Length: 141
Image (cartoon, rainbow, N blue to C red; front, top):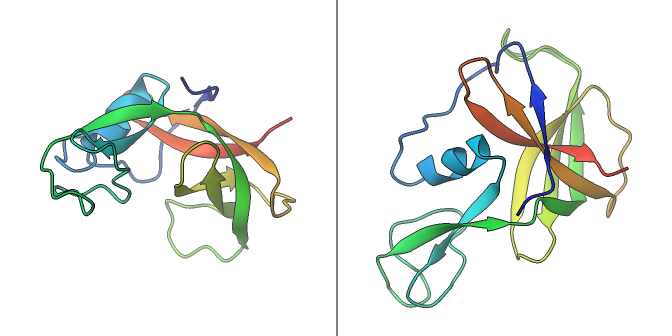
């Protein structure tokens, strides 16, 4: 369902825990090239950030659903001072309001990106050699 593209990287700086009960579905979907969020199966409420119990109806069952991989810039900051060797600078941390879903995701854009509030973005999947995949963002052309 997502319109993102894969971007092979030499290595991801820090790898996520892919078998975590609460967030594993997010990374499993990313491996398939999908951006997915967790929803309550009883009432359909978006559970973002993922949680075990629905805050709307109290339901305890949920599922990961693919959502469109497009959004708009909400805010960003460019990191120019390296604080960890796994994260070479510069890079831009971006907060994206998703289209069609009331959710906001954080990610990064390589380098010093020139962004504007409301600028269209699309998901980009950064894939490490071992297959671990992390959704990030790029400016929509």
